[in-house]
Length: 143
Image 1: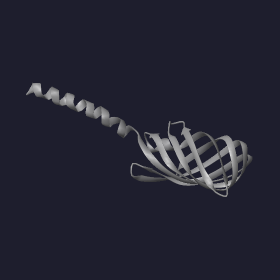
Image 2: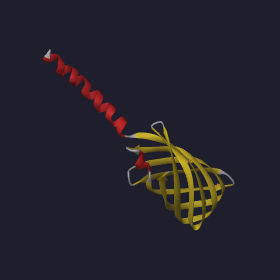
Image 3: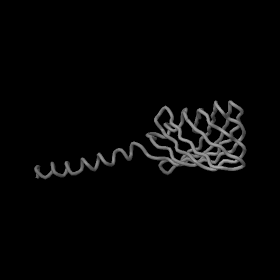
Image 4: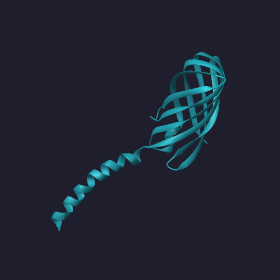
C-alpha cells in the first residue's frame, strides 16, 4: 500500500505545476471610451469596464500627453489586460508611447504598462480631428 502512494503523488505534481500559473494571472477584457483635447500639451478622460474572471469592474481613466499633439478626438478602445494577479493590480499609473491620427474617423491603438506589471493592449475607432506623436501617461481608478 505504501509503495502505491508515492507514484500517485508524483503523478499529480506536474498537474499542480501546470495549473498553478493559470490561477495566478488571468487576462481581462477592457472596453473604454476616452475623450481627448490637445495643443502641444493635452489631457483627457473617460470611463470603461474591465471584465475579469467573469465579473464586471467599472473604472475611470484620466491622462495627459506632451509632444507634437493637436486636435480633439473621441476614442472607443477595446482589448486585453494581462498580468493581473489581483483585480486591484488593474488600477494605477500607466505609461505609454503612442503615435497615430484621425481625420473625421480612423483607428487608434495603444500599449500601456503600470507599476504592477499589468499590460493593456487596446485598439479601436476614433472620431475627430487629431494628430499625435507623443509620450504620455494614463491613470486608472476602479469605481
